[in-house]
Length: 261
Ligand code: DAK
Image 1 (cartoon, rainbow, N blue to C red):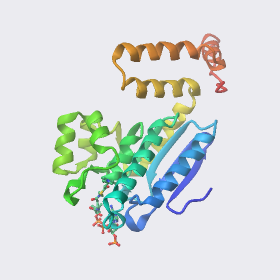
Image 2 (cartoon, helix red, strand yellow):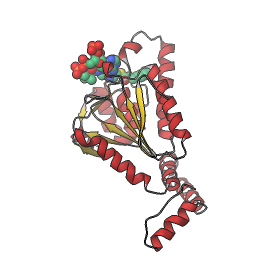
Image 3 (cartoon, helix red, strand yellow):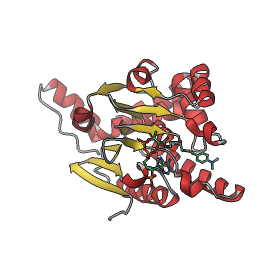
Image 4 (cartoon, rainbow, N blue to C red):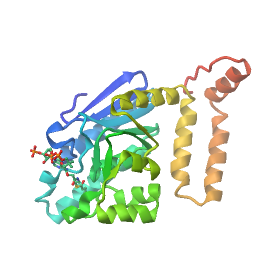
C-alpha cells in the first residue's frame, strides 16, 4: 500500500521501517497522517512474520515537529477532542503492537512528535535529536498522552518541569534522563537501529512478544499479580516449538532456527 505522508518499507525480512514524510511541515502530524499511521500499523500487525518496527522521520532536521499547528489552529473544542482521541488511539496502537517498536529520533521530536516517540517501546536518538513538550507555549496541554508517558519514563518531577517550562532537551541530557536508551552520530542512527532490530529478530519471536506484553501489562498491576502474569506466560511458552528448538540448539551447541510456532 502506498501513502502520501509516510513510507512503510521492509529493509530486511521481518523488519519494518515507518518513515514520517511531510518535509514541508517538518513531518508534523495532521489528521490525514494519523489515519495513515493507523493503516500502516494494520499492515504490520497483519504480517505474522513481522519482528520489529522502526519509526523515524524523513530528512535530517526533524523526527516529527509536533501535531500540525496550522491544522489545529481553528479547531472547535469538539474537533480538538476528536483529534486528541484520534492521536491517542494511534499512540495506544503503537504501544499495543505485539512486536517491539523502536523510535529512531533524528532531529526535533516536539509535542506530538515527542509523544509519538514515547509511545514506542524505546528510543534511539541521533546526536542532533531535540525533545520537548512545548504545547503550553501555544496555550494548550499535551493531547497525545505526553503528560502520562513522559511522567512514567522520567519520573513525575522532571516530567512536570519539562511539561510546564516547555524546555527543550538535547540528546545528551535525554540520555541522562533515561528518556532515550542510546545516542549515536546522526549518520549511524538508522544502521544502529537496524542492527538492534536484527538482534531482536534472531530471538524466539513468541518469547519476544510475550516479554513485551508482560512488561507493558505488568506495569498496570501490582508486583504480585504482575509476576503471576509472567509465570502463566512462561508456562505457555513451553507449549511452543520455539522453546524446544531454543533449548535443543543450546544443548547441541548450534544456532537456533526459530519458526515462531
Ligand atoms: N505544525 C505545522 N507546521 C510546522 C510545525 C508544526 N508543528 N513545525 C514546523 N512547521 C513548519 C513551519 O511552519 C515551516 O513552514 P513554512 O513557514 O516553511 O511554510 C516549516 O515547518 C519549517 O519550520 P521552521 O521554519 O519553523 O524551521 P526552524 O528550523 O526555524 O524551526 C522548529 C524548527 C521545530 C524549532 C520550529 O519549526 C518549531 O518550533 N515548530 C513548532 C514546534 C511545536 O511547537 N510543536 C508542538 C506542536 S503542538 C491536543 C492534541 C494534540 C496536541 C495537543 C493537544 N488536544 C486536542 C488536546 C499536540 C500538540 C502539539 O504537538
